[in-house]
Image (cartoon, rainbow, N blue to C red; front, side):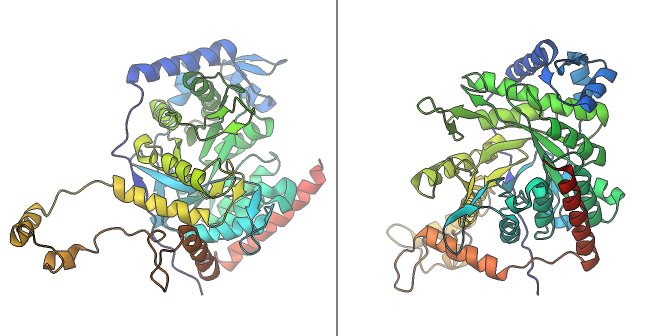
Length: 486
C-alpha cells in the first residue's frame, strides 16, 4: 500500500532585495564579456571546439582555449529561455522557474552517511539515495530531489543509478543528470523518456534536470561538457555550476570570484545555445573562501555572494540555481550547523533564486545525517510563514475584541481567541513535550520523525512495465561501462 505524497510549498520571492544596481550588474557582465573574448575558456572537447569554430569564435586547437566575441555571447544568450518548467510525476509537483518563488531542494552529492540504525559513519551507496528520495517525498518543504549522496557501490555508472533511485522513489522532479562518461549519458535520457512515455512528452515536461560543474579558473571538464551537449540535445534542463574559491581558485574578493564564476557558467550556456538554440539552461555560482589559517574550504561566508549570484543570473535572462542554502560546513549537528542553516535559509526569499535551499547535508555537503533534513525542513516552514505575503485583514474584528476586554482584562475566554488560536504555525520540532511535560530535544524529535517517514511513507510506484524497462537500461549500461574499462 502506498502513501499519498503531500503538496509542496515554495518560498515566495516578493521580498527579494537588490544588492547591486543595474549599472553594477552591467559592469560585471561587461567584465565577463572581456574575459570570454580576451582571455578565453579551456574546452577540452573536440565537439565543443568544432561548434565554437563553426559559429565564429576564436578557437586555438592546440591549447583548446576558446575566445568568444561579445556579440556572439549576447546573440547566444538571447535564445536561452527565462521560464523553465521542471516536471514532477504529477502536475501538482511541476515547478515553474519564472522568478515568483524559490523552490527548495535536497543537497547533493555527498560521499558519507551516518547510518540511521548503527549511527556509524560509512561510505554512501545506492540504497541511501533510495532511502532519502522516499523520505524527501514525504516532506512538503522539498520541492524537488537532488540525490544527496553518491551510489558508490556502482562505480562508473553511479550517476545513472542515482537517477534511477530518484525516479523510482519520489513523485517530485529529480536532479537526475550529472557528469558521466558521454557514452553512458544517453541512458539517462532514455530513462527520462521511459518515465514520461515518449520523447515528445519528455521535452514538454522533463522529469529530470542536470547539473554540470565547471573547473575554476576558466576551465570546462571534458566529460562534463560533452555530457551537457547530450542533455541539451534532448531538451533536459541543466545548470552550469561554477564554484570559485576566493584566495585559491579565484581572486580574494567577492567581485573577482563572482566575475570569474560568471564567465565559466556563461561560456557553457553559450555553447549549449549555439548547438541547440532554446536549450533550457540555468546559471549557478557557489562561492567559497579559502581558510587562510589552514588552506581548507569555507562554504558558509558572511558575504552577499548568494544574493549577487541570483541577481546576475536574472540579469542574463536565465533562471538561477542558488541564492541561499541550509547546508553547513559543520562536521556534525550542533550550534554551528544550526547557525549556518538559519543564516543561509533566511537569505532564500531575499535572493529570489529559482532553485535553492540545499537541505539535509553537513560537512560542506559531504556527510549525510538522516535527521538533518527534518531539522532543515522545519526551519524552511518557519521561513515560509515569516516571508509569505502578509494579509491585512480582520482589523475591525481585532479592534472590537480589544474594546470588549478593555484595560486589565484578558483574552482567554473570548470567542475570538478560540476561533483564531490555531491560525498560527507551530513547529513540529521545537517546544515538543514528553509524557512528563518536559521539553524534548529537537534532534531527538527529528530522528523520531525521520524513522516514522522511513518506516511508513511509501510513494506510489511507477508502473511495472516502466520499472522493468528501466532495469533493462541499467543492466545494458552497467555492461557497457565494464567494456569501457578505466
